[in-house]
Length: 217
Image (cartoon, rainbow, N blue to C red; front, side, top):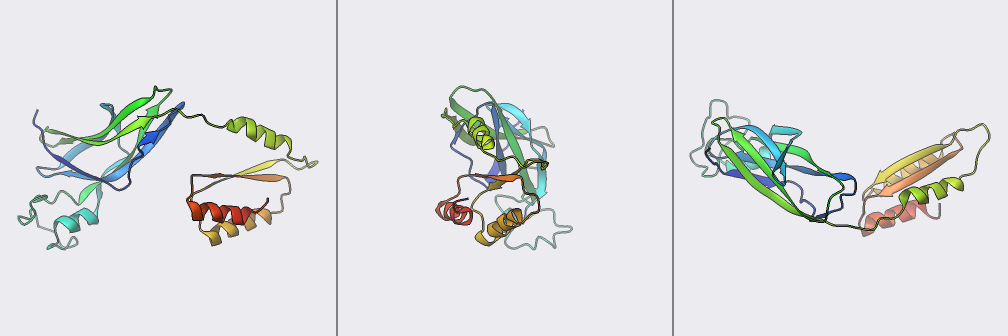
């Protein structure tokens, strides 16, 4: 079967290490196209095993403008080729956006994982591009369930009022929006509640914003 070159650019850098546990997933997004013809189908690869993408052939103005600076992307009706573009003479870069989730089942031994992308063309040709090599690592995680149970044991009961848990996920939150959200939670009429905040490794400023907004609460 014929081979064709697949040009791929990712929008987000993939992690170098992952902890799988009982299973995890990695989000992959970017754009890809073949110089020699349109893509008929696209799939992600995990150690060579295919997984479906969530979306493909999505419009992308950024690669089109980069590869065709002399063309107006909104005035290409009737334009089939751009001889001035060595990388994309057939104008395939416009419908090049894709995204998907690479599902990594667990448990899994530590070691490398290879992520790739495979495209099949209208002519039956197949193109494969390597995306990244991830290292599966083992980490000692805190006993989240145990600590949560301990916190709930100290949760004072309010007679006749059901207990309510509010779970909030944060990542580098904006200070004004975070304070408005927390003030709204504190001002509610329901009295028997607790708010659990899980932060996804915010940077120094984000962590400081959380500490300042929560205080000693």
